[in-house]
Length: 363
Ligand code: UDP
Image (cartoon, rainbow, N blue to C red; front, side, top):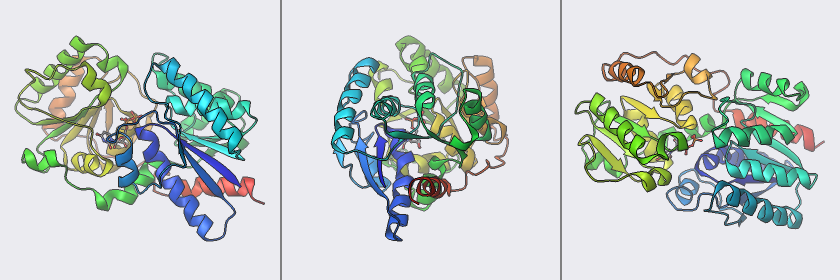
C-alpha cells in the first residue's frame, strides 16, 4: 500500500517521527507498505523544522511544498493548491495527517476531494474554544476523515457525538509520548543551561505562542512582568517562539527572565526534565510534563487535553492572576500533585496505529 504522511509544523514532526520509524520496521519485516513524506513548508526555519528532523532521526521529506508565511487563509490556500498537485502526481491509498495545524486541515480537505481515504492521528480532542485556529482545524479535519486515532476515551466519545461510527475510531494512545520515551536517553543540556549555570530544579521554563497570549504586545509584556515578579529572583528560561518574538520588545526585561531561541527537541526536553516546573500555553508540553512528572501551569482558559489535568501534572489558570499567583507559589515551594500516568501513553502508540492500517489496507 502507499501512504502519504503530511507534516508541516513543529509539533507535527514530533508526532510523525515514531510513525515513520514503525513503518520502516514493519516494512523491513516484509510488510507491503510504502510511504511518501510531504513537508508542507508551514514552518520553514531550521530551529522550527530542520533541527527536528536531525534530532528525531526523521528521513528527509520526499517533497517540500514550500507553503510558508502569509495569513491563515493564504497558507491554507497555498497548501490546498500545492498538495492537490502533489497527490495527483503521487496517488496514495491513504493520507495520514497528525495534530491540528493548518497543514492538517488543508491536506485532509485536498485528499478527500480527490477521493483518497484520510486517517487523523490525535483526532477527536476539543477545547470548545472557537477562537483557537487549532479548534477549527480539528473540527474540519474530523468532519471529513475516515479513520480516527485517538489519545483518550473522551476523544472517541466526541467523535461518536458528531456521528462517526465506533468502527472508525481507534483508541491507541499518544504518539508524542512514543517520541518522548524513545529519545529520553538522548536529552542533552542546551547552551543556555551551562551559560547561565542553571542547576537541577533551580529554574522554571516558560513557553508562549498562542495568539490569545502573544498577539497583543502590551498584554504579553504585562504577563511576563507578572510571572517574573511572582518568581522573585528564581530564573525563568523562555525559549521564544518566532510568533512571540515578533511582538516582544527585548529591552528592559525582568532580570530573572532568560530568553533563548526555540530549542531543539533533545535540548528543550532536557530543560523541562530538570526544571522545577513549567508555565506554558502549548498543548504538547502539557502531555510531556505529565509523563515526566514535572509540574505544569497552563496559561489558557481551556484545554483539549483534560486527561493532563485529571491524571497528569497540569493545572489551568487562564487569565486569573490570583490563580496564577497561587499555583506559582505552590510550584516554587515544591508542593505539587504527582502524575498517575495516562492510559495507553506507553510508547507503543505508533505500533498500534500501523497495525490497524496494515490490517485494514493489506489483506
Ligand atoms: N518544543 C521544542 N523546543 C522548544 C519548544 C517546544 O522542542 O523550544 C517541543 C515540545 O517538547 C513539544 C512541542 O515542541 O513536543 C510543542 O510544540 P508547540 O508548543 O509549538 O505546539 P503545540 O503543542 O501547542 O501544538
